[in-house]
Image (cartoon, rainbow, N blue to C red; front, side, top):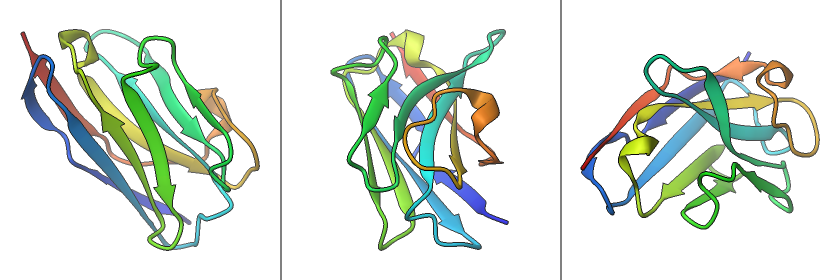
Length: 124
């Protein structure tokens, strides 16, 4: 089993930045695909960004390209999401997820382990 704990969410003004962290425990996830999803009130959970185990490949949803950066520190068993130029539409609960698979995973059904989520609220 893998446990994921997100941190770094909070309230920020439009144009501001936040960095989310997701610490994994239980197993080493250095070779696992990892991703960030978000769910806004009344909406489905959607992919934000994903990264391969080696960090050689990344994926971003069109809505966050150029503003968000996903990265990982395999020595710390941790994945990050740097979020810049935040907008009110970025308000959501952000979830970290992982699966023991290679490459980039973009579908929710492809992931196995999920964190509890961290709230990000962007005020206008």
